[in-house]
Image (cartoon, rainbow over all chains, first blue to last red; front, top):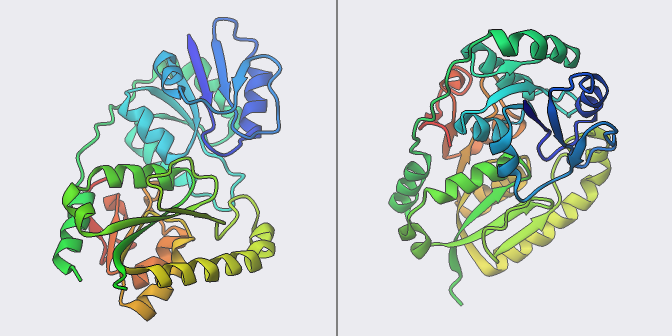
Amino acid sequence: MNILITVGTTSFDKLIKFCDLELSKYTHFNIIMQIAQGHYIPKNFQYFRFSNSIDNYYKNADVIICHAGAGTIYKLLELQKVLVVVPNLNRVDNHQLEITRFLAENNFAFCCDKIPDLVSIIEQELNEKQLSQYVKKSNTISNDIEGYILNKGL
Amino acid sequence: MTKEKVILFIYGVGGHEEQMKRLLNGFSECLESKYKYVFLAERGAKYKFSSNTIFTQELRNKHSLLKSIIHLPIFIYNLLTILFSLIRNYKIAFIVSTGPGLVLPYSIFFKIFSKTKIIFVETWSRFYSKSFSGKFMYKIADLFFIQSETLKSVYPKAKYSGRL
């Protein structure tokens, strides 16, 4: 199974370190790590900081373990990927908890509030639990803004 | 010299620029033909949507409150320099932003001194509580969007038009 671990644009050393140390025992996993500007350097797995062809990594992954960044999450859900979402709490505010809660409540992804829980999610839930499909609905935000501006026109 | 009518787009690193990208994709050529687009972004943003882009320091450091405080004087200096340059060259008719906090001082200034209309889109990562910039922008925005219906109770006067 191909697993991509991605932390987006901000470092998430705690997640990378845990995965590097705890997931190496799963020999049937083919793991690649995207670590951004993280200080922890993985010893057991292939890694990169950023990539212009990150979409290829997304495409090839069977499961993606990701930080709870909304941009990453929506993009991956729209690609219908199986996600294990881990909120990064080393930020000035804990806003990543909100989208994690949203995903858990709607069963759109596997949610991992505490990093050590990753093990049980990978060993059990991934095989047993069925997720609900996220369907992207269209929005009219740009249209509404444009309409507003053209109406107000100075 | 008649100053060009401008829409000032303000965005930041990460989700903020992803949302700005999606937002811009949804505008028609009609809008760009009537208004010049000028962009103000946090340094470190990977997208540059046009050559009229000013990169500047973030308002808040995302990892350390202490750093935010230490960098504040430099932020204020940059703010004044950029404001001066914007006022000199443009008529800012609208500010459109997807956050982050960088949008605040510019919005406050232009709303007070320039009758600029402020349009703000609360971030797609919020479902149950206000973001830092949303909290303040809700009070001054002329048009305020939320991207989850769960925020209706938090921002009663906001407009919900789906998610970017």
